[in-house]
Image (cartoon, rainbow, N blue to C red; front, side):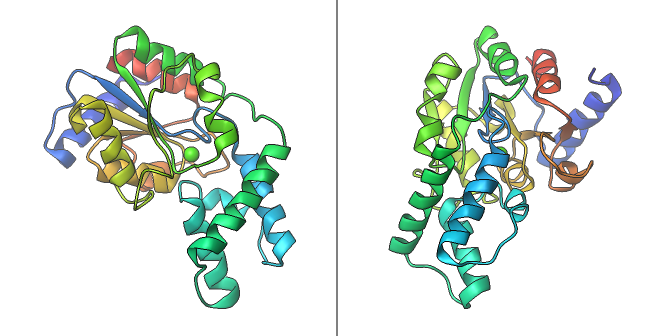
Length: 241
Ligand code: CA
């Protein structure tokens, strides 16, 4: 259950941080991996396998910390560390394709428990759902319509932005696609970099700890409120809407 006092404190803190009062919600901006799908363990495996294939040293768990970055940004980070320089665009494209194939080969990731309830809550109140993901993973993007009943017509993906999370650009673009102001929306993300992006866009940001992060990690990254599951998020959305 969402504690009333915690929610009121979060709303007040948001108002003093942004100068805005959270208005009637017109849109909810959802991250995808770790929010709509329980896909992060698979992504970590797929990155590790790609690295093993081309001889880059890495630890499978480190990829949880990079969540929210674009594929190219993660590849550049790995290259910097291994070779002391970044990767060119063609290399990024090739390596991301290998990683995507590895991910696809693992089969379809399960839906995140509580994800559908959260989305249905938004739709039931006549508000818009917007996808804001750093992913360009075609195999999962293609499933969204079926798994979430066409709720995500408006999408910001890796292909749309110049600067990925933690830059505010992805969430700002999400607001623009929905045609709403920051105080008419909430952002829902499970990763520190994603939470930072939503917060910097001036949006009331709900951090959902669906992975192996420590308690408080998402609030430290700028989340206005930190929850433990998407089921809790559905409950909070019902209150905010
Ligand atoms: Ca995520």
